[in-house]
Amino acid sequence: MKLRNHFFQSEKSQNLEYGPFFHSQEEIQSSLHKICNAWVTHLQCHIEQTNILFQSPEHPWEDVERAIVSTLAAAIIRSFSHSLVLEECRVEKPGFESNQNASKSSNAGRCDLWATIPELKVCGKEFSFYLEAKKSVTPKTAVQLSHYLNTDRGVSRLFNDYLKSNPGKIRKLSPYSKLKSRKHEHYVISMLVMPLKRTDSDLDDEVLFTKIDNTIRDIFKLRLPIKVKGSSKDAEPVRRRRMFRYPTVALTIAPVDRRAGEDRPTGMIAIFTVFGATKNLLADKTNV
Image (cartoon, rainbow, N blue to C red):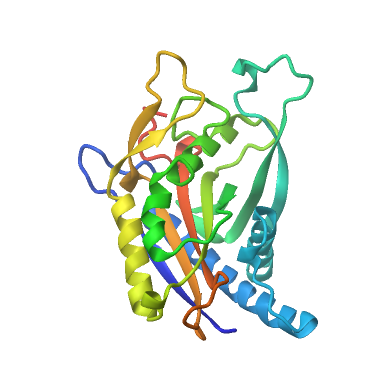
């Protein structure tokens, strides 16, 4: 099965009052684009080789979250020879001292993936990031995508995963910036993967990609209401965030040999959104 890929990139924040959160947004998105291109190449290879091995192609986006993250890690290692990647990276829980559960004997936490890629530069520094991944269990059609992203299982889920260390607080300063043993410039990126199911009305690639682009563009133009879990009693349970301030790249993968009435997921949508960074990478250092 041959794959066709399509990219969406959020527009740069140019509002004078609500400017960008991060320096060099174009370089951030360019780096994510190159990583996604490497991922597509690896996924194509994975499908072709498993078809030979098992006499049936294996599609990683039909598997669990950990499996799809492993293919991303493999893609980075294969395409960027000087890169370092760790899955299920052990990290000290950020903000542990102030956590209500500080009486626990261990403050060890995990991050889905950490990578540093010297071949990619942002602000003159090698592109390094911690990635938190979430995956939809059920496939989404282009029509279902808008509703899903607006629920607490969509964009709100990404925010709440990012906020585990600081319940109720949405900050752009990376919670990993305080790790004493891992001092380096980095970003914190969330990835949301959704298996894609095409309907008979979406058999044309351009129609499908246009629908998906329009949906994601609408989301990232909004001042989106975020359902924040773990807020204090005095805090509002819903916060609104101007999504255009969070650099985003979305990858859509669809097979070239699509078929009408096909029941199984026939591709995937993966949305990468930058939520935080270390202080020197932030455009506004006074409000972290």
